[in-house]
Amino acid sequence: MIQPLLLRVHPHDNVAVVANEGGLPAGTVIGAGCVGAGLVFSEKVPQGHKVALQKIPAGEPVRRYRVSIGHALRDIEAGSWVHERLLQMPEARSFDGLPVACERPVDLGPLEGYTFEGYVNSDGSVGTRNLLAITTTVQCVAGVVEIAAERIRRELLPLYPNVDGVVALEHSYGCGVAIDAAGAEIPIRTLRHISLNPNFGGEVMIVSLGCEKLQPERLLPVGSIPMTAGGQPALHTVCLQDAQHVGFASMIDSIVSSARPHLERLDARRRQTVPASELVVGVQCGGSDALSGVTANPAVGAMTDLLVRAGATVMFSENTEVRDAVDQLTARAATPEVAQAIVRELAWYDQYLHRGQVDRSANTTPGNRAGGLSNIVEKAMGSIVKSGSAVISHVLPPGEKLRRDQRGLVFAATPASDFICGTLQLAAGMTLHVFTTGRGTPYGLQACPVLKVATRTDLARRWHDLMDVNAGRIAEGQISIEQAGRELFDLLLDVASGRRTWAERWRLHNALVLFNPAPVT
Ligand code: CA
Image: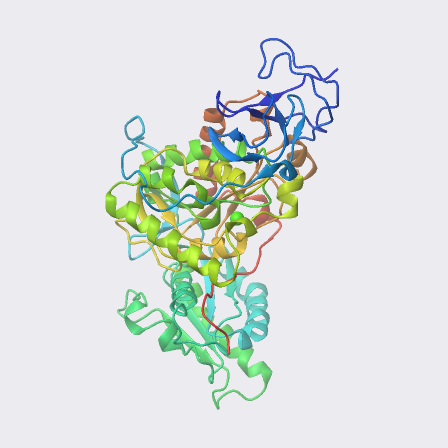
């Protein structure tokens, strides 16, 4: 007989989540001393889904995370399954009268003495990997660049053993777009800033077609390119339409030979011991279920708090998944200006969605709902816990790059799409990505390690060679949220120092996806 296990986030919640694998059948009785003691299940409730702890009359709020995630559309009896068809979603929180810069966590003091082995760049930033990136101005060149990159991997990388890999920065932008329209600066600066990610060691190679709208000088203006020790810009541009190119092979030869000096400089670098404060971590969730907000995301939140105390930078994002918690964010802002910037970004995103005649409710997926997340409010409350409890020090618009003095907890405003969020966090300067998933996704990025955290033991077991950490142990009572956060923190420092994640071992990665709110032509 399995022990029924219900998880309730806050004592005032009138629902709890079923933690048991396979769910709990009708007739289940919750034993004394447990959350929901004495409750009798009137129907089967799947894992990750909610059960009513008490009768919830029609029109009354269903409370989880201490907040209303919706109103009951009809009477819900104690012990019954509370699924999305029984809930009316509340209105989005207005931007008027928000609490500002008033909530402060208990000060636990700085965490000192933690280090990792990283690659120090000339601008002072620190990479966790030593990669050669090949930037492209336009999708037209992507096929050629990928073949050249494959040849560099095969023929040159064995000669430069300290270089971790070659990344072709392929994307669908660059031409056939309204390049001067409002919003077009977002994909352009995103590409520029990704090319300068700390994991690329300040070396820049550009492959251009020739006739495209996004010319190399516009993508990377002269002043934006790092200098070599010899005082020259660390830049090569190969233009496929140049008259010197006769035939396909000559294009490949040009790209391969221009890679050599970059590989030589990258290969001469060695990892050095640096303080943990040099880490720039992006956190994200995808393929979420109702346990995301109970196990994996709170563990990531505990990790975030440790990182911030160690002086590191942690970015959280996903506009539609924080929109319903805007009051929590503005309350945690370091200053009124930071609170205003949070509202500015989220209000802009509201308008962006409005132009497409949708709202934040377009976020949840069929998989989210099958996994027990009734709506975006419930998903948002479980998503935002990844940001921990620290004050929010900075806000970054999409595609912008963090300055070296912008540290601590940062709200990097991005769409919630896994690929767009990851792409924008890379542009911001992310060198390590922590990704939580409940339904399961094999997500990976080529430009930085992705550490994946499973919300459930069942997923961690089935995807044993894709998931790096099993936060499902929290639901089983084997480990506390704080312990899981500490484990993640330690593992992160190892990964930053070169230990490979599962996605890296399989060389699994997804495409870069640019956020382009401007028209195409
Ligand atoms: Ca996401």
